[in-house]
Length: 466
Ligand SMILES: NC(=O)c1ccc[n+]([C@@H]2O[C@H](COP(=O)([O-])OP(=O)(O)OC[C@H]3O[C@@H](n4cnc5c(N)ncnc54)[C@H](O)[C@@H]3O)[C@@H](O)[C@H]2O)c1
Image (cartoon, rainbow, N blue to C red; front, side, top):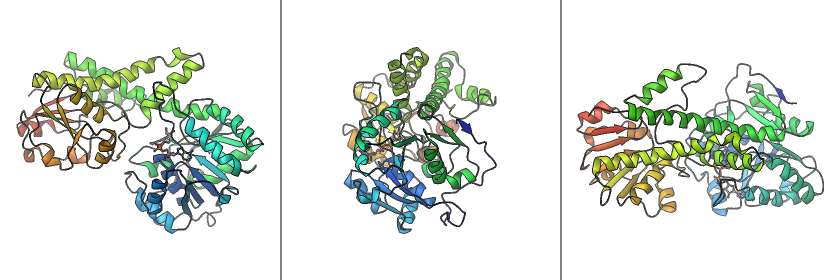
């Protein structure tokens, strides 16, 4: 350790396969697994583990979530997940319950998937859910069981949890860290076919058990990186910091493009051909959001500060600021075009932080909607699937489920989430927009088509001749 097994050509495990992988038939062991915390990560992980052929108990204190999962609904929108969830429940391998019971005593691996949101009034991560999950688990933990954290945590958390669990259980636990890299929208596919598996361990037993858990994936050629706890924790924080940096980098270039007449989209294409740079995560727009990147870069800054090396990632403060400035830029563009926002009505297309998800945590679209309201206008929000989350979290915003009705009587439109529905929309069918102004916050619209339909089109990172 650390060791890295290089990827051999992988025979991809497709989540759409109808037949579950027969572990015994393939010579792999079927294990008993618990998954603790059943949000986006945990619910997906349960299904993935059951799909691999393991017996899985999902544990989650929120009874409404348990009821929903038992009835085959993950409780959030994720393409293909509910269908696979129902199949795995029907297989008899996947069950759900609200707390540990005797059945937890002979679990081989407990995966901890609880939330680590940003603390109120601080940049740091709130790790209290991890501590309570450990406390609940301790009375049922066996000496052989492996406890594998999957949540994204500040480096050093696993070491603290080891001490805590040792005190609670009365023996040294096999604590490991196995960060998750899934992306919402392709969560199950990503869980079963990640670019790499990373496990931080402190003993051979933990490594062996985790190898057994992921055996079909490892044998299909997915790189399996075995390292120490701190590296495993930091891998996830570093990956997200890098991705956020890439997005804010192109958005910083967009700021320069906007005042110099350059085109940030073409710029991204041109630099992206350099394979050292690559073109992924290099599209300028209203920036990143969601339940991971914003809180993870802030948590990394906070943790580096605690460790006395705050300067090492001080630049992330600017990455965060560039991201936030992109939303302000949309408000500036609207104000410039409409004169004032007071008394106006603006339609925001999209509420989810990205398409194919109903996650509205730290959503750029909702921040733009809130800024519009703050400037004295009414923001009307449309989203194909995420409006219930908006109504719950932002009751002050007006929502409209019907896309065509949403345009009715608004002064301008902002495209904030690049749902396929908006990209494919025929602008000739859109009526009721007073100023026929649309701001493309994601650089995905067919500008000429919208202009032909009489719209003035503005976009981030470029100057459009209208
Ligand atoms: N959502 C993603 O795309 C994603 C991807 C990779 C990593 N992660 C990381 O995974 C972790 C979970 O994220 P999420 O998006 O699933 O969060 P989430 O808020 O959707 O889910 C967390 C769940 O944990 C449950 N929980 C809280 N305390 C518990 C306890 N003591 N015992 C059992 N369950 C408990 C909550 O009720 C909730 O259902 C975070 O650290 C996140 O950064 C998330």
